[in-house]
Image (tube, rainbow, N blue to C red; front, side, top):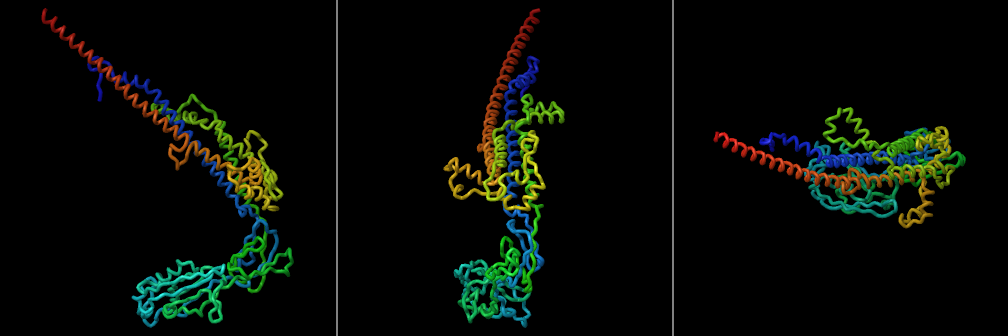
Length: 537
């Protein structure tokens, strides 16, 4: 604590504070610069979030299924359900399920617990502690094997160790964790064990007793046979699905029969059927019709998102910059009312991204992406052909508008061509060439073959990465982006200047202290002289 002016009567503290206010003005400008850079960084990051939202909106219409306007309805959804892709023509088809695909199973021939004992068996308790329920199992500490064959006919085999000091669940876990494709479990309600293939259908197996067995047991099977009551001959073989399909275009008397599907999900002519149970020998109808609502809504949502970001960018790069309104210092903010400070901040934050080259570039490139024709095999190669055009008012800055009637007609008549226009992919012969090695002609050809959505997503991602390089994101430190490094530099300047201010303030106090000492010495001399004069009178 310093106290000045005791000898001179001067308010030293007030004088030094006023002197330091003048000295501190460059420091205020450093803090204002830091605040401006932080605001600019946040403005860039906010713009990146909006660009990412647009990229996600574009991605939502990337898949063919997202623009599929075909709706398929089964006449009996308890027996099968159906979906149709955009290539299926509207009309009524017929479908019959002769047999559903099933899993191979082998179930205990009877209860594994001795009912007379009155003891309930537990699959999680040690086997050798449940003799009353399942009998003495001490003789079954051996090994048995399970063999299966996969869809390619390759043999799969696992050897299971029986340790009666462990639980039945421990033994079955060895099976379930193996790659033989078999699941084993104990059903306490029925008091039986079930072995089943994880996949439906008929697989290659081994002929045993004249039957094609698909879960083959080998080795020491005494535990399986005597304790779990699993017998090889009790296997219920899995079977393939058998279905028939009629397309009226080719005549209802020429059904297609499929009898080799291991799965209950079967695709025929662009329609995917999920079989649940046989149709009782009768054909059921499948009605395919158009519903453009979902596809239209997704495209409209994308256009709305595009218009929103276009508006945001246009505002950001044309917003006026008020250089006479720098960020407020803490002292200046205390002198203003809350409303005055808020209005000042609005002016100070205005124009932070004015004429930003990255944002101006993405704006121009996105327009080019949308308006450049796409090389497709469909009937549409320009966005205007499906009813999406720019507004007639040039002051809108390139906003899009939708002719709903035209877009719905395109989606209903040829959704596949709409998908090609939006989502075509360049040939792998071109894209397999490293970017740095591509010729100008190859780059133009890739651009021509790439759909509008792909072009936009590429442009947006490139711009996002450029902005991250300038303004960073939550995963980057200040050293890793341009504005962050500028903040580090400003912080360093602030630290250096604050040390300098401390030295200046110290110097002022030293100067005033020396003045006080001189005044005090003069006062002492004056008092001594006065005393001598008074003494001589």
